[in-house]
Structure formats: C-alpha cells, structure tokens
Length: 248
Ligand SMILES: C[S@@+](CC[C@H](N)C(=O)[O-])C[C@H]1O[C@@H](n2cnc3c(N)ncnc32)[C@H](O)[C@@H]1O
Image 1 (cartoon, protein in one colour):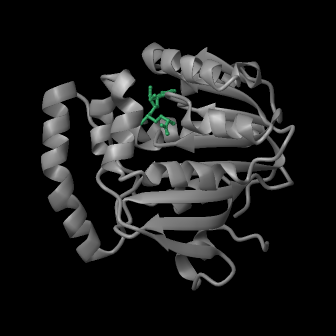
Image 2 (cartoon, rainbow, N blue to C red):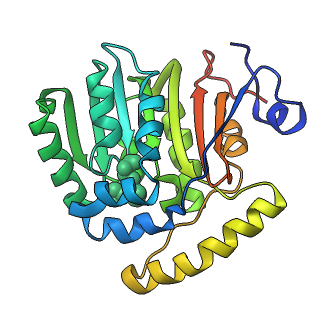
C-alpha cells in the first residue's frame, strides 16, 4: 500500500486509497442518551444504526493480528476490545465511565475473554503516563465526537507516541458530511436529535469536521477511508509512519 499524506487526500483524486461507500447510518448523537443508561447501550446502538455498527467493528477488528498489543480508547461496553481479543490480541481498554466498564467486564467474562483484556478507568488525558512504542494497534470507535478539539489533537499525538513504528490506528467516528446537500440533510435530522439528547442527558456530541485531515495532520498515514452514505460516519485505517518524523 503506497504512503499518502493528508494533504494529498484533500487535493489528489483518490487513486491508491480505498474509498468505499456504505449504507446510510442514523444520527450518532443519540449515543449520548444511551450512555446515560449503559445497560441499554449495546441494544440501543444496534437499534439506531440498524445493526450496522457491528459490521463496522468487525471490519476494523479484521486488521488486528494474533499476539498484538492493542489499546482501545473509550472502550465503553467493550465492542472493539472483545473483537480484538477474539483475533488473539492482548488488549488494554480505557474509559472514563465506570458503568460502561462494568458492562464490558461482564461481557468479557461471559465470553471467557477477561484474561486477554485489561480494563482501566482512565481518560485520554492520562495517556501521557504510558511507555512509548508499546502497542501494535489502537482502536477508537465513536469516541472522537465526545472529545474537545484539543483532546482529539492530544489523543492523536499520544497515539503516535504509544504505537510502534508501522503500528495501526483504527477509527470509526461520527463526522460532518462534506457534500453540501448531504450536510443539509444531516443537520435537518441532527438538530432535533441534539435537542432531544440534550434534554435527556444535558450533554451532546460534536461530530468531527474533516477526520482524515485531522489524523494526517497528527502525522498518521491514512490508508483506507470508508464513508457512510450520508457521510455522518467515517472509518479510517491509518498507519504510524516507520520514521518518528512527522510527514509533511
Ligand atoms: C459512544 S461511546 C463508544 C464506546 C465504544 N467505543 C463503542 O464503540 O461502543 C463513547 C465512550 O467514550 C468514553 N469517553 C468519553 N470521553 C472520554 C475520555 N476523555 N477518555 C476516555 N474515554 C472517554 C465514554 O465514557 C464512552 O464510553
């Protein structure tokens, strides 16, 4: 796979990158409502995405190899962590929400995968205490939209440090569609859902504007991009460059 930097993605027709279309997804802003009731989170995510998040998790996890060390950022109820463990990885799952972690722990026990996954109540801000170049892959699904802009940049830079040279970053994130009419449709659907979510949880999510550019700016090489039909979910397969130097 050729190496491509983020500005090339923005300016050059998408030759060597794999651009794939997937079916339309529903608004992810409702996941905040689901998080306020973690026991219903998995069923709820399944419902609002019509089961398609499961396909997203499977697709991202398919890149993980037996024996790898993996960190799952914002692991929630363990969707990615358990898949990575099924692929034979040793996983560290971090999350700030203890209720989500409790459900992840039960799920892993039921699947007899507890031995492969260490769950930690830890926020992304604490990543700086981790040793450098210890992970073969990092996963981060539906988390970026819950972080501030500064936290996103910080997390990406920390992940560059924590991943081994050549390591993989696998992301799925709520994003703002780039095409005008899809963006219009997106806001028409999203605004009432944001209001509903805010009334129920006093929180919301903030979809990411240009995820491939942001990840590229942190120095990752974006190898695969997959957009949902509406453009409100983006999946990325990114590689930490072999040299520690930032690609520009
Ligand atoms: C929508 S859930 C996604 C959970 C899981 N990755 C998935 O795909 O189902 C977002 C998760 O990110 C966690 N989170 C939010 N802010 C965080 C932070 N600063 N550090 C670590 N985890 C965070 C939340 O507690 C929540 O469990």
